[in-house]
Image 1 (tube, rainbow over the protein chains, first blue to last red):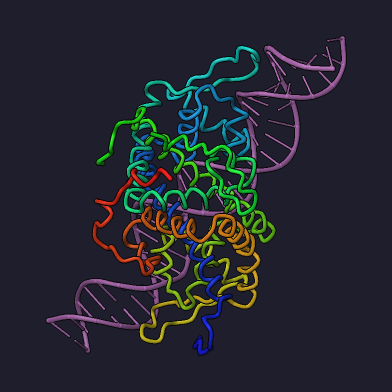
Image 2 (image 1 turned 120 degrees about the horizontal axis):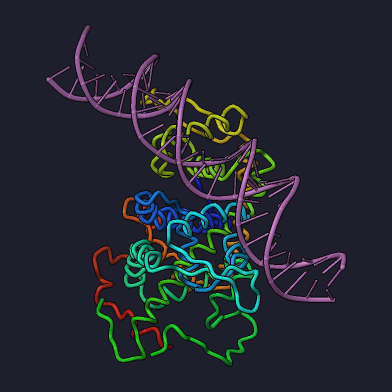
Length: 179
Length: 179
DNA sequence: GCAGATATGTCAACATGGCTGACGTAAAAG
DNA sequence: CTTTTACGTCAGCCATGTTGACATATCTGC
């Protein structure tokens, strides 16, 4: 335990830094989800319902298979929560135009209302954290988390991309920041 | 929210930015936990076991109540997984010295081995992301996530960074975004 | 020293949300 | 017309959360 070494032991520091990152994710996610979970309980819903409501709201006319790809769960699991949401009038389904096998999902007004209520808390939490941290930190947060995400979905968050190599930033697409 | 207006609908942009943050957390956590989950299945364990193993490894001689405070689950839920881990020889319990009611938890060699195996993947993932993002981004990542976490546990991640009070209230939130 | 608080464990019952496997139907595609 | 695809459904299993009640050992304060 007694680290009586000469140098600052970079291996230990690295290990410690990585562990802190892991814990930041754990505690962050724990607190990030706690508030909506409370509200969901009033509706007899759980976190799975929230995810469906969120992504349907985010991507109107999303198909079931697209939703499955995002959530990475089985269709049977999705079916259970999605079925409830449809039956209780939070989500509507309609056949696709080009492909009538598809069920395009959409939030109803009721669904949108719940979505707002749920993510309101989360938005406030993020907004506070962003404001306290400052714009530069926000960029770092985005960059690191984007790189933590596996390739298939990483594209959802593409922005400058300050890759160590190829500094070919020919297209600085800072869409969400532009004024 | 002293948002300096003047652009093309800053409210929408802000909304978009906050939603992206929410999704970064969702996708990040999803991919961060996927690999260990796979390994755990071979042992007949789940994510709950991983969390216990992780935090016991991280804080040797941790008490049950400290663990409960971190995990935010009931003692009955913890008891189930902890009991398994103890019976199967991954964790040991011994009475506290000052307070003999306490059960101080510790990993066995077997437990440490599994812990390493599990978090290895996660460490690699984080390390890659950190390396790609660079030191400045890492600081930002830490700062934002720390602020997302509720007060009681935020202290776990406090670094030099002073500004305990609201020094950020007056900080240039949006002005510095443009680079 | 005893009463009450605290740390932990346990039994029992229940809900949520994952999973697999099997099977069905409608529509698209070759 | 046959096969593949998109989606749904039934049935059962497992992991992990919950509440409530109760037990036991130990510490703490009066």
